[in-house]
Length: 228
Image (tube, rainbow, N blue to C red; front, side):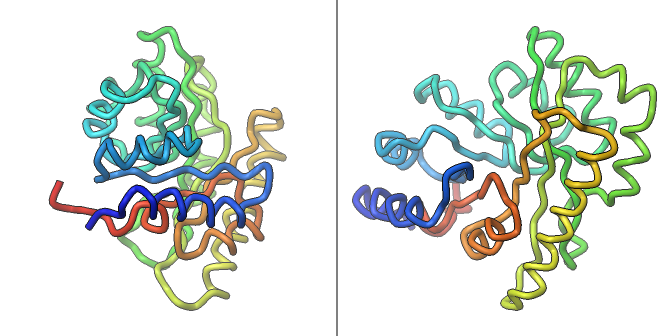
């Protein structure tokens, strides 16, 4: 199902009223047609999130070049080369191997690519992400310190899919505590500032717990179309 143009504009207007200054509304456009993205663009959206590299590349090629494309899905190393020339932020880094690949492809493009470390904060085992211990294990290595073409700008996580709002809140608090630990111990720079958490169903709780980027798709564009 697709929302009509008027509904997309109305949804954006309604959601933006609930998001404070300093929090980025990332419009999750995965599976959505370019016409829907352009409707949001014409309303003022410039940041869009995709979860498949090839779909992102196709949209990048056809849509305005001032759009900031965010990779929010699990990223395979063999797909990094396709998005390295233009991606604005990769949210889903969950290994040193992936970082090394991003660094290699960024160097080819003469770029420094901002990245977020993805942490597993939910109860579902199917979700990707690091533990704090796993992250510390590789960010303290010489190999990590040699990466000159990536910058770690913060953290990302997905809460459990549940109606238990207290559980969701606690998971977001856990991610915020991971952010604080990493900021204090390893990334004191002002560029380490992003906490990407919160989606259509829980973004207001995420904002209350410190989110700086909320990833909202269905509340803007309607239900995802998996047939594409």
